[in-house]
Amino acid sequence: MPILPARSVTLSSPVQLTLPLSTDEPPTRLVRHRWARRYILRVLDDGSLKVTLPRWGSKRAALQFVEANRAWIDEQRSRRPQRPRMAAAEHEALRRRAAAELPPQLLTLAAQLGIAVERVSIRNQRARWGSCSSRGGITLNWRLALVPDFVREYVMLHELMHRREMNHSPRFWRLVAAVCPRLIEARRWLRGEGQQLFQETR
Image 1 (cartoon, rainbow, N blue to C red):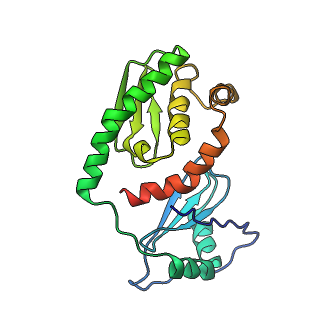
Image 2 (image 1 turned 135 degrees about the vertical axis):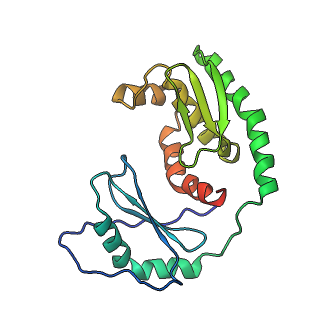
């Protein structure tokens, strides 16, 4: 699974740019992410564009960013093979496998760390890998059955540490780092190949 290049720019002054109006142009999707620190542009399998905006970003600047990188976009589209999305039958089989395999793995980690978990749910979350409720329930994305072991373990440990700290404070990240030596590597994988996996299994 390739890691797609990401480009970012600082727009120091407004530039008048117009997006192509042709109906043949694949769509551009703008997604605001509160943790993003820059504009990130990706060319997806179907040729469409995904632009991640930082919390302070604007739609106008994002579209300018797209136009400023038009040559790069065209190059990526020309290089990238079209890959079919996962068939429905395969999708369902993987979800059943995830439901059977992921909860025991998480509960084993919880027992090793002395953390109580009320229940484990497997869901088809569209953008999140997992979540933890204040009542002790943990939800995992079924796509974790497809990621490398060290990435899956990071996501599970991340959610388990929320049983001790229900936020993303510096203390929380210290707790995660203490139990997950490949923390940085796993987060890098999720930002790159993990985003591609979401696209392929929609």
